Length: 141
Image 1 (cartoon, one colour):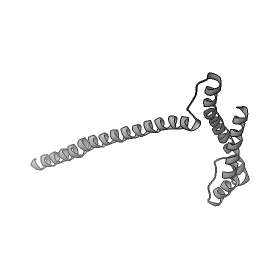
Image 2 (cartoon, one colour; image 1 turned 90 degrees about the vertical axis):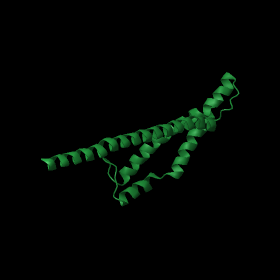
Image 3 (cartoon, one colour; image 1 turned 120 degrees about the vertical axis):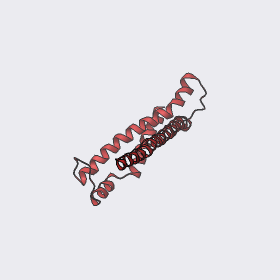
Image 4 (cartoon, one colour; image 1 turned 180 degrees about the horizontal axis):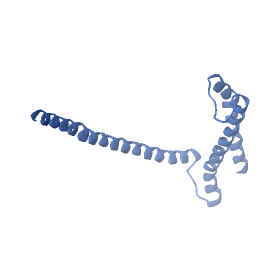
């Protein structure tokens, strides 16, 4: 299992190193006039991006190790024949999270629609009626 975990961490860093080049990102930021506050453009920006990227990759690799080793621990130590692979665990976690996020978005949109309707009822009709009554009252005097 230790070899399995080591390979996961190695390939996480290997993939990140192949796909993402901090020096190109720093050069693109410099060419387009962008910068990271507190960091000078150029080589220092590339070093900072590489530092942040290493930390993020480490956290992601540890997460992947945990997700991939949980089924292995269930199978070897507890004796439970786990049909839960790493992918199925990711799906079981991400689907409920996405569902909850969509429900919250729907409820927020519904609440917003209700607030808009209330403001139109109170603001639009009452103000127009009050203004009309004030105008007609002024004209009578």
